[in-house]
Amino acid sequence: MAVLTITETDIAGNAGTMQLGSATLATHNNVGNLVLTLNRTGGSAGSVSVHVATSDGTVLAASALAGTDYTAVNQNVTFAAGQTSQTVTIPILNDGQIHARRSFAVTLTSPTGGAALGTTTQTAVTISSINGIPDQRYVTQVYADLLLREADASGLAFWVNSIDNLHQPRNAIAAAFSHTA
View (cartoon, rainbow, N blue to C red):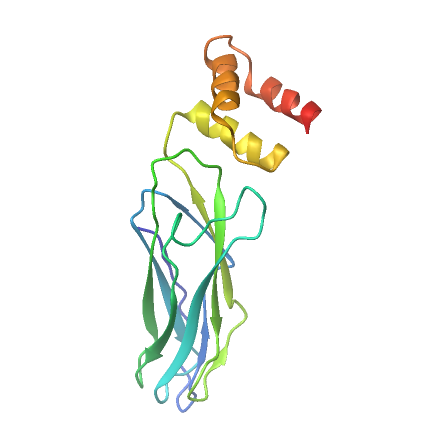
């Protein structure tokens, strides 16, 4: 389980500012649930809420997709008077396949009750695969980075064999991909 947290002091009489603690967060596809902590800083007067939503990544061959890589979240999170943190759970899905790193976004919008948004209103979450052997994950990532697509089964087998059985160094594999990109 990965947790994102920030803490600041409270100002009496102020509804506060709501934000995420980091612009980026990394996790593995075997984490189960990613738990994000939303913090209300600079004040906790009155009841406030903020909208939290996930969105699929936008980079070809590196986009995490709701329903495949994670379960989408689209909800309002309410803070009672005096409450300074809340959590949101995002299920991370593992389909058993070997994937390159994939990213999606978590965004805060629409604060209510006099609260404001802080400086970090979006977090890019990157999911790394633990499926397969390290050389399979490496080749899959090279496909995504250099060819901007998923690895096909025959290409994956060929390049992994080149590393494992023909003892080609990884940098030679990446160089070979660069010449075909």
